[in-house]
Length: 335
Image 1 (cartoon, rainbow, N blue to C red):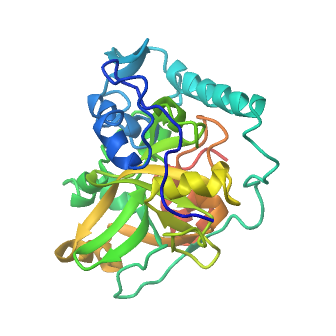
Image 2 (image 1 turned 180 degrees about the vertical axis):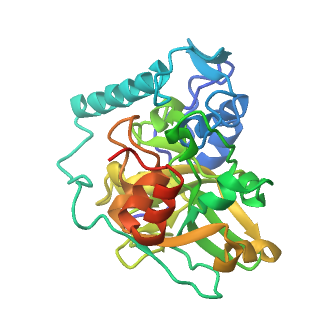
């Protein structure tokens, strides 16, 4: 099977000025970065509205034809912070999935059903920085109770919100993806941009949500998936979680190879630490709590916009210290 990137037959025309006959995907990251993705800059923290606070601080993007404009926040939020906007995003996802089913794109590939394989375990790193594949949960004592905002907040784009239990519990969750000579990189989990890949005019992966992976724009698009054997992929965990950055290869993998679009997650930007900043991850700093999370739990998509924040889900599964912290600070749902 050829593994070189090739056109993947998708038009990216989110801005009205972009020509409608543009079909270049041979350099998809470059094309996306210069055309469609600046739309996210119109509302640079839109993703944080979904999972990382600031829900009441930012305007919402609203589509008008081929344009995206900014509208005032609706006053339709219910008691748990959910709004008609959340419901509309869910309807959009269902609509695109239905379209794929009608066109025969989806196959009988098993999804990530709830099972005993969904595990979260606390990790004792002693004096070591976390390895690639480790998940960092924000320590709520530092993020919620400290008088000064930790540097980690800016690194992830997190903004505090105390409007409700769910808003307080929308704490950063970061997966470490790479150790490099200049530092460490990861992706922020659970922060949906409010866009699907199909919103970018891409036919491959059209129902996959696009997540904001952090506040560092250097990396561009990266993908988590369950195909460590895919060309160019780096395996992160023993159970087969992998990370890639070549979108063209991913298109080939699902169109000509054994891959399923349903087993990919997409992230724009990253969380990064320079070498002189990695001490922030050490256990005695009290900023991050390291855990391991099973592949299928990391790759699953929310069943609805009304799920508890990712921090709550992982902390409850991990139990122990995290369970105690969640209980003490009132971050868990009433039993």
